Length: 66
Image 1 (cartoon, helix red, strand yellow):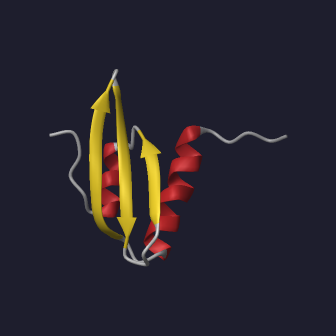
Image 2 (image 1 turned 120 degrees about the horizontal axis):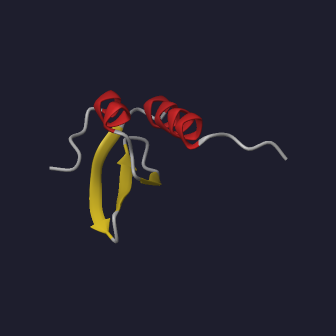
């Protein structure tokens, strides 16, 4: 089984969100040192991610960890 690095998986995740038309709204929660995100996408689906990088947040056009 081939494993991919988190950075590569996150890049694919961001591309999937962009292909779905972007983020309609998102929710952020901080717990036990991790940031958890819930994304409602413009195509009506919902996706989740943990510890999104600031670089990819900028690509998605969202502001994180304020």
